[in-house]
Amino acid sequence: QVQLVESGGGLAQAGGSLRLSCVVSNAEDIFSDSSVGWYRQPPGKRRELVAVITSGGNANYADSAKGRFTVSRDNAKNTLALQMDSLEPEDTADYYCNINRGALWAYWGQGTPVTVSS
Image (cartoon, rainbow, N blue to C red; front, top):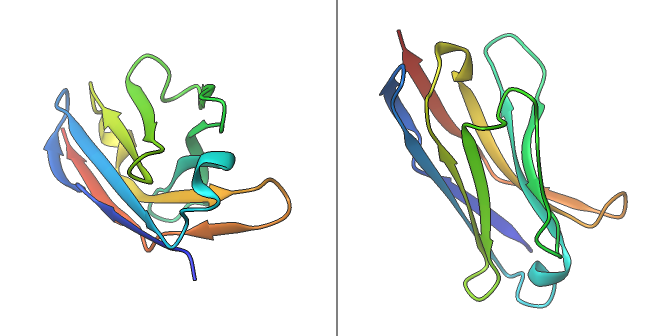
């Protein structure tokens, strides 16, 4: 069973930075051929895309993340990361990592909370 475990969430001040990491286990045969990414769910709202990176290394970002967040992946270690800079209170949410093969399947982590104070 593929498992994803996020880390790095916590409390930050507006303008500060946090780096989220995600380790994907039991995915040695699929990680490099799959898209991976980050989603978030703000309090009382629906889960939304933050950033994804394809198997080919192409990254796409939500408008709210462009210029502030950077997604990366390490196919040798089966990990992905999200560097978040210039944090805003609106970035407060539970952040989830994801690995998927389009509509075929997807796996999710349990989430890590991020709180940004003004």
